[in-house]
Length: 169
Image (cartoon, rainbow, N blue to C red):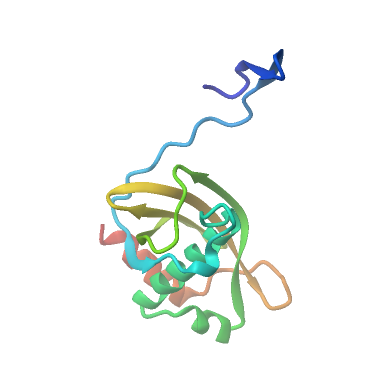
């Protein structure tokens, strides 16, 4: 499947066939192999599960946030330090691919990796794994802003620890 490629779907409703035509707007997302990552292990809590007995799609971002917080702590630069310095990494863009549904009580691994570090932005890839299978992958582009909402340079200390982490692949 390629962007712009036309597709046809035949749907039968009450014995009547309908043809739906369209064009693909995005290419199929493939799981990336992360060469270096920080990993946490956690169990899916009941409060993240919807009536369909799967993790609600919006709740994945809670799980990713927990893992990103752990990643920054592992660098000896907890997110609270960034906030004390008057900054925040706001999510400007994200893309998420759901390969399999997560269920209550699954023991999952969440992997966090840095894809790109620029002066004002940080791009991270995060993946959720269960029993050696990737279930979800997301890419976040975060912009450093001050508490007035003005785009700012990523503080030097954070840039330094991220650069060092990336260099030790």
